[in-house]
Length: 198
Image 1 (tube, rainbow, N blue to C red):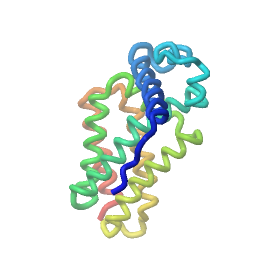
Image 2: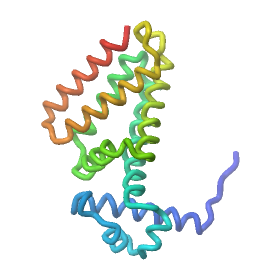
Image 3: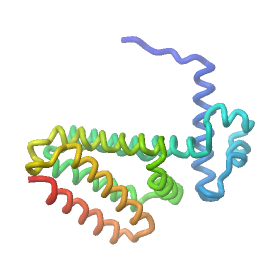
Image 4: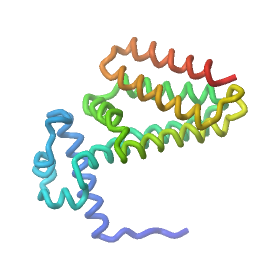
C-alpha cells in the first residue's frame, strides 16, 4: 500500500482553501449570501484579496465549490448507501428522497441559501457539470436496477427526470413547513415509483 505524503506547502494551501470556505459559510449564516463580498471573505479569513484570487477566479466559483462539497457530495454518498444497503429501486429511491426530506426540514439558513444559489446557477458551466454529476449518480442506480424500469424507459431518461423533479421540488420547499415538505416529498416518491418502475 502506497501512502501519499502531502508537502507542507500543499497542507498550507489546503488549510487556506478550507479557511476561505469555512468563512463563506459563517458569513452567509450571519449576513446572507447576497451580502457577503470578497472583501468580507478576505477580512474574515485574514488573507489578501490577491490570495483569494489565487484560489478562486470568482466569488461564484467559491460558492459553487462549497455547494459541491456540502450538497452534491452528500447526494453522491446517499446514492452509494442506497445502492449498497437497499434492495431494489423502490427502496433505494425511498432512502434517497427520505434523506432529502430530512435535509430540507433540518437545513440551516445558509444551507437553504446554498441550495437556492446552486439551483439558480445550474445553467452555468460549473453548475452544469454539477447537474451532470447528479444525473450520473442516479443513472448508475437506475442502470443497476434497469430490469425494474417500465418498458421503454432508459436509465439515462429516468435519471434526467429524477434530477429535474428533485431540483424543482427542492427549490419550492426551502421555506415550507415540515408537514408540507413531508407531503410533497412523499408525492414525489410515489410519482417516480409509479411512473418509472414496474
